Image (cartoon, rainbow, N blue to C red; front, side, top):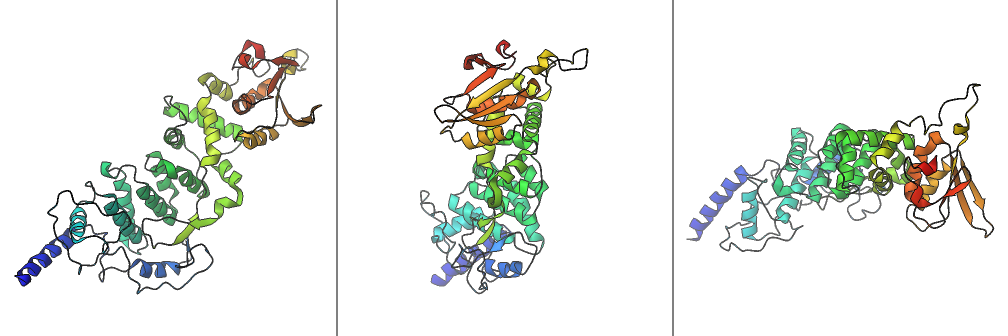
Length: 415
């Protein structure tokens, strides 16, 4: 009876193993992760650092990888499997190895691997991603095919907003230094909101510019605006923001991060033994204030920023060729120290203006003053969005103080 049971079990295992995903790593058939990494470590062109297995915090401490060490994610055909008789059997804990599954859970996992697009426990998806990440270090077509599978899984409803899938895809793009594929992934909405900051950081490191469609995705996934945001609006607002910054927004944000942008940090992988480090510049903290600014501006403000009217640019020259009285118009914005998280950013923007000066009032308080001519008002509006609610902020037009409630684009009080 025992021999009959074992014969049926082995036949059942054989059927399952021949029909599971080709990207699944099987013990004694496929190379372990450590064997693949040993080969990859010898390549000089990989844009990652390999970390010591026991000292992963030190990215300069390399160690010989033990190729004989078992890969926890690999499937051991010698382990028993059995169909579950309990429909309500508990799902495995996320992070477990194949060996850590129960026989019934192993059977369910192998069955699911025949169609990884089907609904499954998160532990199954995580373990499958660990296998796909390992395939990324293969030196054959399996690496390219694994990247295609990662791309396809983003389109599958059952994988939903899987953060680990998003991270695995980002790793694939970074390993290939494939900026075009990364931009396409962001524009398609495949990158999880929590990973977007790093994703656009990689785009910037690879020398690509922010596109209108990427801007739309950032605005929507970071919930910066609830207004309809079509392609033309995205193009106009991106143009306005680029003009204000004087450079591409991604390049600007990357420069603001300084040395941190290129510093390799430990990468969190689905495969828990994949210990690597790579640059992870998170542009989210820099970009959000900028995008909040263009998300809150009205359509009339954006139109003005793109195509200033004759009235706002100061009119025409006088008959003698000298500037007319209209061109002598000026607006002075004054603001003081604030506890706002955007103070440093606003002060940085103010100091970039040629009309900036720093004063001290009679109470020895520092006053930051910026003078704008009419042709420069687009820069005033971008700064005004930050400082308008701060205590001590004042606006003076031709020497006369203007109440805050009178300040809006094309306001008669600003003429």
